[in-house]
Structure formats: structure tokens, C-alpha cells
Figure 1 (tube, one colour):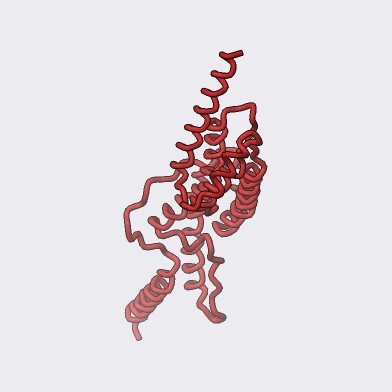
Figure 2 (cartoon, rainbow, N blue to C red):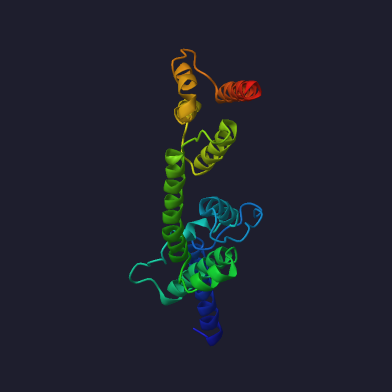
Length: 236
């Protein structure tokens, strides 16, 4: 075989190898199937779950979401060195992009702390480990505030009901399910001592009340109590 024929054969063989490697590495190279979503605001220790959902969607639109769960590829023994190199480097490149997209959505202090993570998966797991535990602690704290809340005779009942509604809103925001019937029963149970008779009246009503109806009744009763108190003070 002439030198020219040998050279052509080598080039053809290399082309076939590269084609094969490219096909094999396509699993590690993300395909941009849709336009990227709006980049999430930088996370700064507050509301991790909300930020995490936005970040996951953002990575999905970039076709990089699998790298938060994926370890580096393990190739079968006997895989040619050139194919091993291309597949590994393709995975490292995509993982590098994924990791830095996540880091770019962290506040500077968090960026500096978590930038040492070697892979997207390690970074994602480290964030989850820290902030999901803190979210659980926050949920327990809000639940405790609700359970410990006691209305006082020295303050307006409606004002205290509004404070209780804020706590319920926080519970719902933390993903805790509290149906309206339970809220009504809890609000009635937390009425202050001087409201004992009215509390018993409400508890023994057979028709189920909506929370809005309960608040209207409490407001009316409080107005009546204030009116009676005013009349007593006038007579004295």
C-alpha cells in the first residue's frame, strides 16, 4: 500500500472514531430544548424551598438539571482512551456549567463558602442538608407560636385574632395543611377568660361557621361589650 493510501486510511479511521465518541458523549452534552427561564434572585438564607424550586426550573430550561443528582460517568473497561477522554471531559464541562449557574444565584458570602464544592451534586446536597433542616426548624417554631398563643382580656380580641391569622398564614406558607373548620375551632378555643359564656355559645352551635363569619360575630360581640362597659361607666 502506498504512503498516500495509508494516510487516507488512518484519517478515515480517526473520523470514524470521533463520530463514535461524539455519539457516546451525547448523553453528557445537554440539548437546549427550550428557552432559559428568568434567572432566580440570589439566595440569602431566606426561604430556601422557594428559591430551590425556581433554581430547579431554571436548570431544567438549560437542560442541566440531571447534574444535581448525577455522579461522574463510569466507563466500561476496555473503553478506548480517546473515547474515555471525550466523554469524561464533556460531562465535566456540563457539570461545571451547572455548578456555576447555581453558585451565581447565591449571595457573595454563600458563594465564597460553597464554591469549594467539586460537583453540582455535592453543592446541591450541601445546600439541602443545611437549609432543609433550618426550614424544618422554622416550621416547628411557627407551629409552637400557634399552639402557645393565648388571648388576653386586657387586649382587643379582634386585634389578637388578626395576629393569630398572621401565624396561620405563616403555617400555610410552610406547607402545613390547616383546614378552615380547624381554624374556627382553634380561634374559639383561644378566646380569653371573660369570653367564656360566648365561647360556650359558639362551641355548641350546630351549624358549621366559616372563619369570616366567626370574625364578624366576634367583632359584633366585642362592640357590644364595649358599649355595655361604656353605659356602666356613664351611670357611675
